[in-house]
View 1: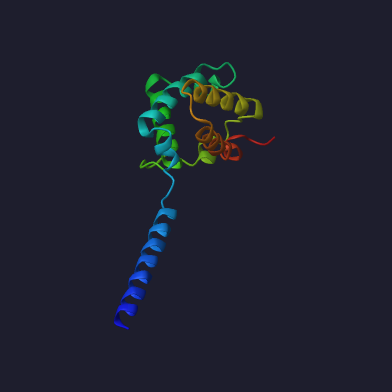
View 2: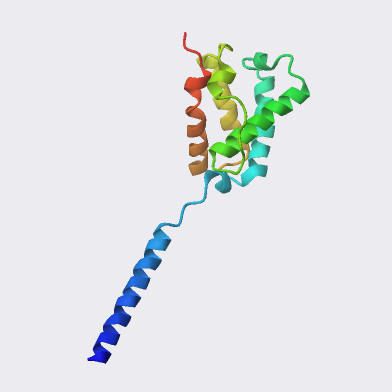
Length: 151
């Protein structure tokens, strides 16, 4: 009888171990978007390409008139911290909320679309894989209501 109980307990313990292992594997979290796109340096490279595209664009460049290189670098750094934060990275974004930062600028649909095209061109340049690209574009799209002013 003792052998039977011992075998039953061993079988139960093994079953529990297998169940716990399966549960632990199921709980393994997919790496953050931040990690999947290459982390801080990858985001910095993206912003180093994206911000100059905006600054020199005939449609949206007007929002950067009078912004010296130092101010442009500040804008780039704030954008880098923002993207790092929203993609699950360790950065703390200490800038103003998007709505506050863009209210009164009068950014319209055409200007928004130009910015999105530049962002997509930058993602193309760096060959960002489709799943991560879709997540990044979706993250940017969520900002539209805070940036584009309704007429």
